[in-house]
Structure formats: C-alpha cells, structure tokens
Image (cartoon, rainbow, N blue to C red; front, side, top):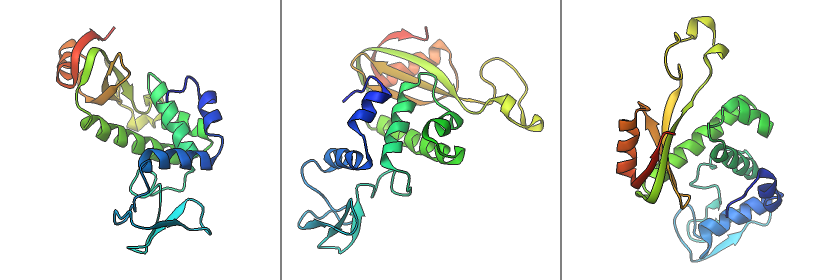
Amino acid sequence: MKYNSLVQMLAVFPDEQSCIDHLENLRWGAGIVCACCGSTRKIYKRKSKPGVYRCADCKKDFSIRKGTIYEESRIPLRQWLIAAWLMTNHRKGISSHHLARELGVTQKTAWFILSKLRKAAEQAGEGSGPLDGPTEADETYLGGKEENKRANKRLSAGRGAVGEDMVVGARSRSGKALAQRGVSASKKTLGKFSATRAGRLHAIHG
C-alpha cells in the first residue's frame, strides 16, 4: 500500500503492535514459519513475551525481527517504518542528522538505521530484475557536508558534490525503482545503467 503522507502512514500504524501485525502478515501470511529451523509443525506464542514465538521442534524463541535488518536492534519497528518512509520520499536523500531530528534519536542510531535500510534496498534491487516500460533515471549525492567537518578533514572544492557519494537511480512508470552507487553523472553512465537495469529508457537526467 502506498501512503501519500507520513500522517496517513502513522494513522495506519498507530502503535508498535500494528507494525508487528503488518510485518508478520507480509512474512508469514501463509502461516508462521520458525525463523530458526524453518519448521511449521507447531509454533506457539510466548504469553509472557508479546510478539515472541517458540518452535516445538528446535525449542527456540524467535520474533518477526529474526533474520531481518531489525534483528540486532531494540529500535521500535514503528521508527523503522517511519525511517523507511522518510528515506524513500526524500528525492535528494536524507542525512543521518536530519533523520535523527525526525525520529528523536541520536545521530549514531539514525546512521545505523539508514545503513541497514540502504543495504536492504541494494540487495532487493540486485535480485529484482530489470525495470519494464518507460523509465526515468537520475542521480543524487549522499554524504556529510564539507562545512560540517573539521578544517583539516575538508576536501578541496571542485566540480560536483565534494566528499559525497553519487547514487544512480531508475524508476519505471509503474513505481518500481532500482538504485546503485555510481562514479559519474554523465549521460553515457546513466544510459548504461538504465539499459542494463531497465527495460526502456524514457528520460535521462533532466
């Protein structure tokens, strides 16, 4: 489901349990599968631990976080979903400092969230195949601003976004998108990316 605004998304996910229910439905819509051994024979809820299940075969506890980018964190799932919405709806990308302010967390925590989300998006893009139909491609730059760095750490000014990484992205009219780190914003580079990862290039770098 696509949400037109953050307010609309938060109305759908008003609390942590609604986020858990949503992710469980996405992952285990056909029935809960043990995230430790893969068994489906007998899984039951731990009454003393909301959202935690125990497998009768391997005798281990697990939750919807097991085996996902959320596993190694105690950050509420609602904050993860908010971060994912903000990241995918900021055309120029979102910095860890900006995300920290939006979520009310430390910059270190925001950086951790973004790194996990970007890695998940990269892996999903690698296995999702080419885009179909008319496709648009563009680039953006991600990274800290030079003026925020210590004087002895700043890079000399030049053309382009100094000290930032370029990310090339392509999006089909159907809404499917792919992205990868790039080295050049030239028409040739974007054209090659689109020809490889997309069905037909419609527009490049307006």
